[in-house]
Amino acid sequence: MTAPSSDDAEGPLSSLSMPPSALPSPWPTSPVLLTDRYELTMLAAALADGTADRDSVFEVFARRLPHGRRYGVLAGTGRLLDALADFRFGDDELEALRAQGVDDPRLLDHLAGFEFTGDIDGYAEGDFYFPGSPVLTVRAPFGQAVLLETLALSVLNHDSAIASAAARMVGAACGRPCIEMGSRRTHEEAAVAAARAAMLVGFSATSNLAAGARYGVPTAGTSAHAFTLLHDDEAAAFRAQIDTLGVGTTLLVDTYDTEQGIRTAVEVAGPKLGAVRLDSGDLTIEARRARELLDSLGATSTKVIVTSDLDEYAIAALAAAPVDGYGVGTSLVTGSGAPTVGMVYKLVERDGIPVAKTSEGKRSVGGRKYAVRRHDPDGTAAAEVVSSAPLVAGEHDRDLLVPLVRGGRLVEEKGPAEALRAAAEHHRQVRDTLPDEAWSLTRGEPVIDTVTA
Image (cartoon, rainbow, N blue to C red; front, side, top):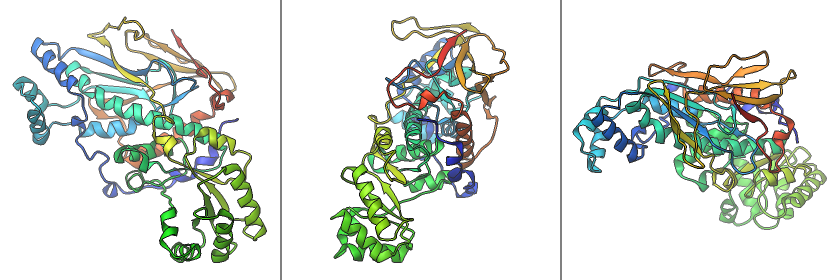
């Protein structure tokens, strides 16, 4: 299996945008409350003993990839930076803390005046990562940096898990479009984030309207079986949908009998029907039968779209079938399809002194890290070099860490839609640099070794 062509995914995100005034806030809950209480416990104690102002460096990295995975895709950085701009404790947030028993006057006074003034570096969103890759580095006084832990991990762990799974599906689809449709299988806000992560790695559209509004991405959706069951017969349901949406719509044809459903669809819509959707049965067999029947009825341009709990393995199994696109939901947004990537947020330096954990199974490497990706002369990635000392990039190396925040301010101001388009473009550029074995769906070791210099 080869990497998907970069040209295949240029359409969905390349031209869509929305004016900033039209974009709803991506954070309906104050970001500062999306925090574990133990962050406040540590901060209160650090304020009391005078260590809260110590210059600190925290790093986000994954100790390992999910079992058998060959790469990970970093996603969520744009959402995290959006949240940072609103990371303030106002009167409502402070009152919420008091209601939960947080009553330390010194702590509450500190939070009331909280403002992040530190620096953040990280891998460009959409890039690949491997075990030990320092995908995010936060340098700030301890009392500031510690408060970002929960939010950073919840965003990056979730979005990177979705993006990594979605990238495997895009690779398995070999250029055929994938539509994200997992909203009904996860939390309502997780659904929006999942749609964003899927679009980042090459999905062509999402069913989620909030994602379409926030990020300016294409939305798509046809009818459910309930719409057919609502009507007296299948023909009446199809006719109503076509009268409303035109013959280019997609009709769900397997509510009763798939063969008869296809015949009825073409009879009602004519041979220019946009697509039929199959959602049950052996999809390889059903797709072949559907294609043959459509062609025999003169509907040679009508596409065949398949759904029904698809994952990358099911998509790969359909590679030889006459399928024109895939709708993916449950296996993308749930843990079975997108296993946790296990990123952690660890203190690696304080006041310029490297610090590290030595506990068995959870050892860390002290000191702020630098990272470059080395490539063969033909541009294929060969190794990831991570060092606690600055690295000089060679002729075929690429520096991986880019500045994101300086002195508490974003290095580049981007709206949600613009940030997503930039991440998607970066992903398109770097995915073609991975070795061919990256796209194999068999279990294996990370396709690039992480070398500690």
